[in-house]
Image (tube, rainbow, N blue to C red):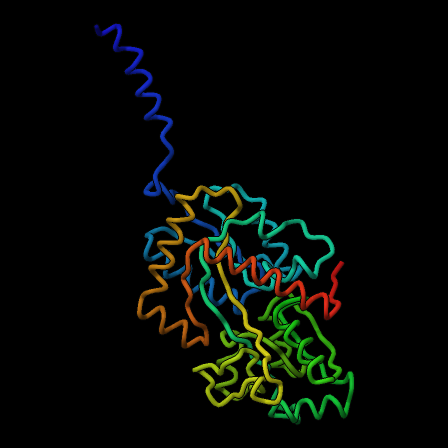
Length: 323
């Protein structure tokens, strides 16, 4: 009888050995969160805050690794080509994930195909901020100055084809003005040149520029989203300033390489959403001028799909192409 049971026992043992690891076996080593921009910008600020809080919750280290260049494409490509084991993630935003597929003629990755969405972290409105030396403090004054001196004013953003860049291009079209766009490798570098007075305007998110608006080192001209932000309630929206329907904002979310096991995606989503629900985390994110989201991987994927289509139409209309 034992002889007859022996093959069955071996088969059972083999099945046990081959059972996939449970989420409790992950993570077994530090997780690397790639930020595809230089330190100091909105993507970096959010990534570091969320990484620290999630590390504390998971009791495992999440290391932020800045890999700037090509409007986020360099860091994004690293993650797209990384092993799908949950140990290399990307803190992306709509500029890299939803806009770049339309603006770049050649892209080494396809966000909808090469990434698995984990969680959309936060929604972030944008602002137009200026050096205090600029002789314009409101949007009507800025438009009047731009019309008086076509092609003289310049505005910067986190990169060519970034959300800030497209917001500026839309404003140029709506207002009938000519401003020169200056692209950087991240919001931090763009910010430094505006603070130094080398560039007059910057279109960026509140986490990048908010502290400098509060201190008076920059002045806020207008908010690009449909509603004002709580941290700057006196700054009007572009829509309120004479251009109804103007609405541009950004989202920042975490993705993993395509093929990452669902159990790992679900585990990461559960841990990060749990962090985003914490009262102190919500308060901190809102103090940065952002609104926490914390959706499901499926909902985030739908957002990525919808915004990819939306921005494709705007990029075609503005005729923005990057080789």
